[in-house]
Image (spheres, rainbow, N blue to C red):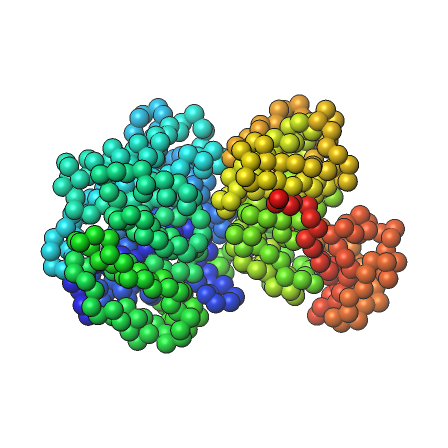
Length: 569
């Protein structure tokens, strides 16, 4: 193989080591096979842009440790942490970074007590590489945006000190160019696209050659001025390949041929390919590989993943919920939309379903939650819903609460929910009992109009009973903090998200009399047809549309719809 060029392997925002149902099936075993093949045959540099230790169903139990073996096998050269890598105590985060045995670079976040880079990360990093047989020193800066620091829950906010990413980048790049004599600069970032754009446009005379980002869970490739900006998908579904040459690239089919010969001849394996010239010194070719089912698995990694999943299935699921992973919970009579670019951008049927569950289970007038709660980043197709699907959607460990909230404070919460739109931000809300419109062309804090509470105009001085989650009520991610005397049910009640969803959707498991109803296999009957108006299940008639029988057992039927609760004008 041609080893003269440098091949950068990039990925970001990876959570689930197990493979998924449909292509790209992802999974750590196929992902590491692709990585290792490139590393064996080319001159490579493997880089990561944050979010690996959480959140996932496994991270709730293993607290990030489930990723240490995969990280070792990925052979990452340099990494920048993301917000979810700080989902644990500071001591545990530091332990994860130390045991991962790779350089973590976070240049603009500091420990306020020690003034050192946060969690023992590095302020910058350099690595000696070769491009075209020419030695070149590459400098790395790792950057976070201020917005996600407010999402860190387990580490006290007063321990975190932040430096503006633009000032830090200017200072650090200048040092890397002038003091370290770096000939190529790479920024590893965990920021939204607009901030990455600002970074490239802001640095005048101190150019960053390559910005490799995370946080947005998308495939993105753009040349801005003389810099390449790229994000490489999410969750082991995709791998970014950046080929860098000192001369114009002539053998343009090298990557394609290697991919088709080594992994799969399925054309779906390649997502995009671009040829770009960054400057007279650097020519690049960019590709995105989709991790599809026809790619072979690394057997060592497959056995590791299988062992972790078996441990989780056999011990944890049954211990906590007395339910098997494959147990049918309910039947969805429609697709459930859970992709990040939908749930964090507009009203979706899955957000409506969960918001309704919160509202009716806590007997509240209204409910609201942050869409970052919904983690599957996929469409859950019409059909049987098992515990496995729900576990994938709701892996976050957060408590459900019930509060008294004035209309004026509710409006502030709604404003914060749309304050970062059109960014795919987890603060975007799902609501029940509430409808509103928002105008994103208006300034932040003045976007919400026409708020209705159960069909009536919002009253600023009225106090409403609301169901929500601790993450919001404790004031994270820009939300107002709810005072202690406003809680009707607080976090000490330890009402968990997933157990609440199961209690509602799997109601037939708790009421044996429902199994005796006259329902044929695969037949759907409404609650009215079954004369259940006086049964407890009728309390959830907004959520449960009927019952069906699958495999001889009766289960609930859900069919959530878009209802015009949130409208962009």
